[in-house]
Length: 145
Image (tube, rainbow, N blue to C red):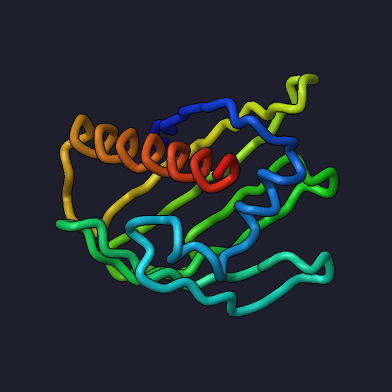
């Protein structure tokens, strides 16, 4: 089983506001530096995206892929799995939010990615760390900005 990369950050906003930014896929290209286009392919009965197509360009890493989302009923977590991808064999991830009681939110991001090309574990974990760190910093900037 692949190891998960886990990172966290505290955002100066209530959890509902953080989750609204996470769920607003149409806006991703305006604040997620690597997202060239994002398209919601299907929406669930809860009004949140069920399937989303991403076109990513992060310099050396370019990929087009589709993710399936599972939203927690309490609005405090979302998880996803890869449906299809060009470079990725698998991807699973999640955001888990925890209100701190002072109007702020702790955000935990977990990510596991497996590529179709061989990659040494050390490099894969370093890439996941960069991805998760960048995603959390961009999320924090978007929510607080």
